[in-house]
Image 1: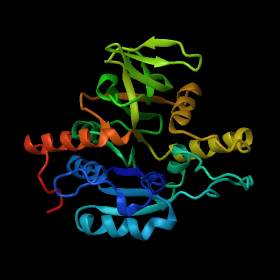
Image 2: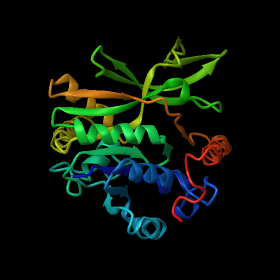
Image 3: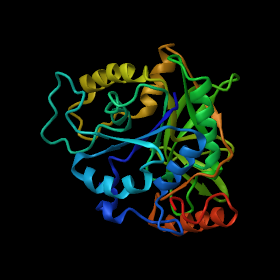
Length: 300
């Protein structure tokens, strides 16, 4: 059975203002999602599942169905506030979605095979999809998940600080811990992360970081449901609390349920953290098209 690609796109409308403005970066108006899907199809993924909000489902389908029809199976899952909350009551003042691990949980009924998860607005590179497909087809089991490890130096923005999941990798190439560093930037030609108290600590450009490209066995759904219940017990009244994928990965390791393989890639990640990043994304894609890595029209 071919693996599935799950694309986290529920936050897109709020970021872009409306779906009509999904930014076009490629020479024929391609969005960053288009390149991810193209790379996934080439790597052998058999289905694309989009996690979106129900109120922009029709707009979303209008954009993607004509391109993908006949090329790959598609499905749509809605991330709604009351999904999978069980006996808990969602606070009236809660407006923020429950986070990326809750988004995955919402896809529980749509996925029965090994699958990968990516963000909608990050460019991951063909190499990462090839390595992830090989993992999902050959190594993925109930006790073996994975994450693509990017080199930190290939993921920073020159326009401001970024947030990255800094990975600690053991001698077997497995994740031993992942720490979210929320303020990473270049300072005097050195990459540093800054703590809440203002102290700065250097990081090597070769440090592996997660860009939210994960590989999971369907067993992750039951684990996520258990952990989400624990999260709600503890944090439901905090309007800013979120249930993130690294929480699930960390507990999977900590509770000795299994291991998370780190799949190293030399691919250059890029995305639009700041609007000033957009021209750089456009020129990076133009260069890839010029070098023959992609056709000048992905869906022609």
